[in-house]
Length: 154
Image (tube, rainbow, N blue to C red; front, side, top):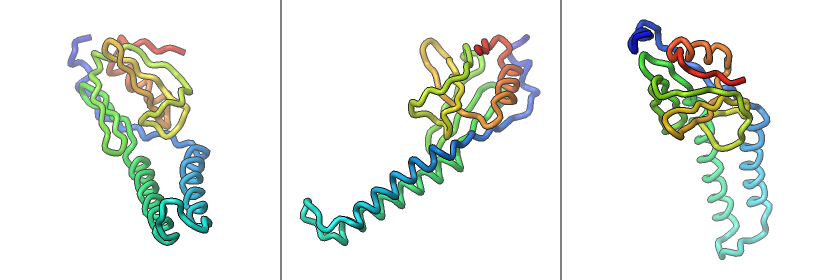
């Protein structure tokens, strides 16, 4: 297949699968920290209790905003010549010719994925990225149409 044979395929966007337990763990921990700060009678740092609660409230709000931003922007885009992985302010551009393999994994390492039901995309000499498309089968099929030499591992 010529290198540009897939160029007639339309752009496809795949949203990330979301694990509810993961969301509850992250937000529960954040809100738990705020509850501890609010119930603390004093601060060892010499700050008044209100200042400690205020700092924790701002930190909690920022973490919630980061979570919402991550949720709203995490997606995997298959374009003419490359796969784009987007998550909050992070972006990966991976040319199809560089992709070597894709395999299912539950690797818990930090990744542009909102679920631990993931795919490991190997590209370049030693690079890889973990993603979690909501419709895994459709994503793999679309990727295979664009990168026919791609090795799909069970």
